[in-house]
Image 1 (spheres, one colour):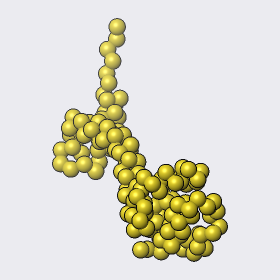
Image 2 (cartoon, rainbow, N blue to C red):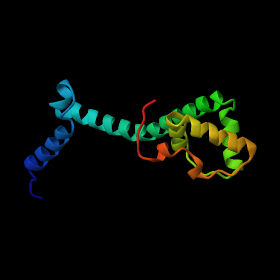
Image 3 (cartoon, rainbow, N blue to C red):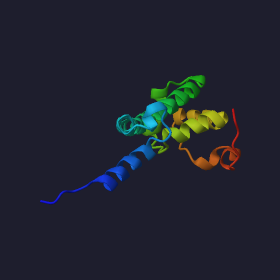
Image 4 (tube, rainbow, N blue to C red):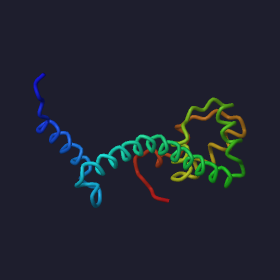
Length: 136
C-alpha cells in the first residue's frame, strides 16, 4: 500500500478549527489542541443555552404578567385560568408587552376576563397598535 502524506489536508483542518477559535484568549486561539477543546466546549454550551434562553424568556414574561396582574388584584394563575376559560389565544410574550407598555389595556383585559365578557382586540387602546414604541 502506498504512503499517504496528509500535510495539506491536516493543515487545512487545523487552520479551519483555529479560524473558529479566532476570538478566544491566550493559547486557545493559537494552539490547535487547546483551541479544539475550547471549540468543542463552546459549541456544546451554545447548544445547551439556546434551550435555556427560551426558558429564561418565558420566566421573564410570566414574572411581568404576574406583577401586572397583582397590581390589579388578581394572581397569575387566576389570570391564566380566565384566559383559558374564555378561550383567549394569546401568548405570554404579547401579554407581557401589553402589561408593560399599555397598562390600561391590560387592566381592561383583566376586568373583562373576570366578568366573563368576550374580548375583541379592537377595543384596546389604539396607540399600542400604531407602531409607536414607548418605554416605561
